[in-house]
Structures are given as structure tokens and as C-alpha cells.
Length: 106
Image (cartoon, rainbow, N blue to C red; front, side, top):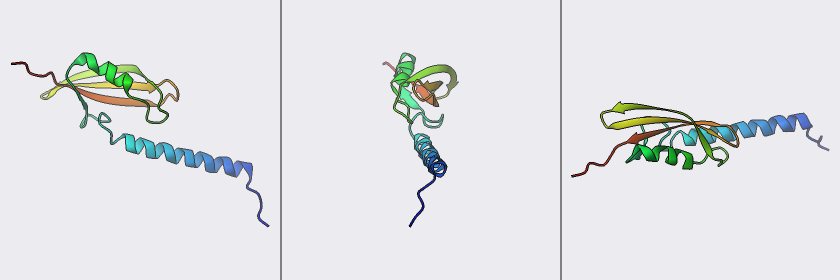
């Protein structure tokens, strides 16, 4: 006859499993475009940056992201913008990187 699992042990195991899911999701999200300045999301106009950032869902819960702050810097390949975001639902913080490279008109 096996002993039933203790409630405390079960809660700890569930918490460990949840932390593992979060770690795995964050690791996969770090490989997405825009996750770091070396792989920014390319946009043609600065006016599109905030719209695209808000349209990006939270990687943890799929909720909407709010802009918490932004910074811009000039690079030889265009303007690099860093958008600090936070999820409305789970409050997970995310940083998205955009490169504004306007199309050259002839």
C-alpha cells in the first residue's frame, strides 16, 4: 500500500514545474527577433515602433504589453530603439529592440 502524497510536497513539485516552464519560455523568447540589440525588429518609420510593440503579445501569458519607457540611439545602420514593456495581466517585463531604417526614395 502506497502512502498518499502530502499536500505540501505536491505544492512544491507544482511550483518547481511552473518555474521550469517559465525558464523554458524565457529561453525561447530570447531567441525571437527583437529580443536583443543584435537582432532588432526592422521597421521603416519611427511612428510604427510603438504600434508594433503594443501588438506583440506577452510570451508568458499572451496578454497585452504596455510601454513603460523607451530609449533611442543612432547607429550606422539606422536608429536603434529600446522599448521597455510590461504585461498588463502577469506583469512580466520585456524589452523589445527595433531598428528604424527609412526607405531611401529616389
